[in-house]
Length: 165
Image (cartoon, rainbow, N blue to C red):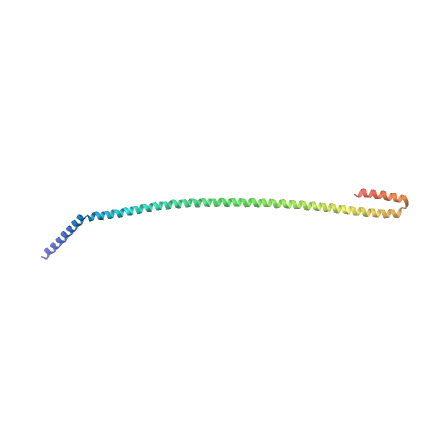
């Protein structure tokens, strides 16, 4: 009997379970569960679609920033090349101006030296002429006397001045 009572108990549990399932089916619980699962599935699908859209937008933004960075790198390289060329041009220009300045100053110095030499030579000639005239005048004055001496002296002075100048 114990075998039969266990079997009857299991049978009542099975019948109660079947009635419970029938009540749940009658109340439409399975539709509510399926609707909740479908809603959750739709929410997950919408979240996945949104995540894909955000990922695609982020990738597009990343690609745009990488292009901008590459462009900025090229622009920076071009600026460096232009700056280097400008610096070389300015250095060459400055060197040419310095060389021109040195040449101009050298010419001015040479001109001043030549003028000073010419002036010194003229001063020496004038001093020599004055000394020679003075010496000739004294010598002639001592050696010759009278009117002849005065004429000779005047003539000699004129000749000497014309030759020395």
